[in-house]
Length: 51
Image 1: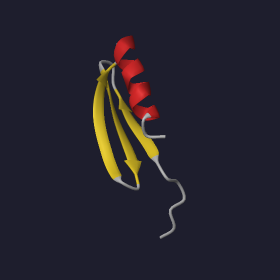
Image 2 (image 1 turned 90 degrees about the vertical axis):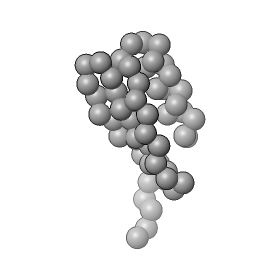
Image 3 (image 1 turned 120 degrees about the vertical axis):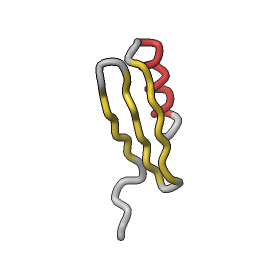
C-alpha cells in the first residue's frame, strides 16, 4: 500500500479533556490533555513536535 500522508492527528474532544493520537511512520502516540488554556497550549506544542 502506498503511503499518502506521512503523519496524522485525530482527537476525541470532551468538555473536560481532549485525547489526541498522532500516527507517523514510526508508530502511534496517544496523550490526554485538559481543556484549560495552559494544557491546550501544551497540546499545540506536542503536535508541533511531530511535524
